[in-house]
Length: 174
Ligand SMILES: CC(C)(COP(=O)(O)OP(=O)(O)OC[C@H]1O[C@@H](n2cnc3c(N)ncnc32)[C@H](O)[C@@H]1OP(=O)(O)O)[C@@H](O)C(=O)NCCC(=O)NCCS
Image 1 (tube, helix red, strand yellow):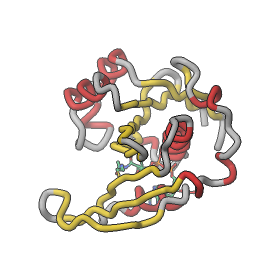
Image 2 (tube, helix red, strand yellow; image 1 turned 30 degrees about the vertical axis):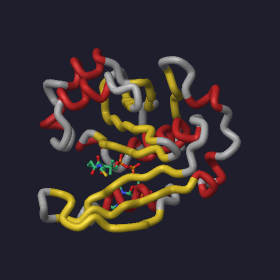
Image 3 (cartoon, protein in one colour; image 1 turned 90 degrees about the vertical axis):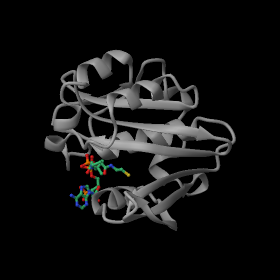
Image 4 (cartoon, protein in one colour; image 1 turned 90 degrees about the horizontal axis):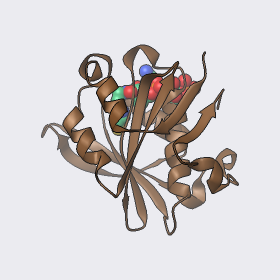
């Protein structure tokens, strides 16, 4: 597969993606929500691009000593090609680069097996359930990765490699 480039999400990315956000990605976040996230000083979003086309995006919030993964999505036709893994590995490195962070947490729909498998691959553990969290119907599983449990392959990465200005990292493969 062609190189995946990871960069910080910008307003230009939102302009580029707005026509196909609902059709090509899952529809649970709107352009307006993403726009307000870009203005939130506690949030950071990244996009994955192939040949300059956005094929995935993901974000985090920093909350005291925890980083919360707010979203991670791959364009439907690019799934199972390691884009989700590349995004998640960058989110973990971004969290690792922050001071005083002890854990990374997220909620995932109990019916969303692909996402649960992705998180498990990176060492996230189930730590709780929020009943009927989604549409007052489906439970959310709370998953956490303790910083001390970060996979060996992701340790000893210098912060400079994590977030150098606009271009975070280009992966040939994980
Ligand atoms: C979850 C999601 C981001 C995964 O993205 P992806 O680019 O397909 O992920 P990858 O190719 O890196 O897959 C990594 C691992 O995730 C798991 N996985 C991904 N898709 C899967 C599927 N359809 N069924 C089972 N496991 C799956 C596998 O463990 C996979 O590793 P493997 O390919 O070695 O078996 C993608 O399915 C998606 O965008 N879903 C909709 C949005 C969403 O639900 N986001 C999570 C919100 S909490």
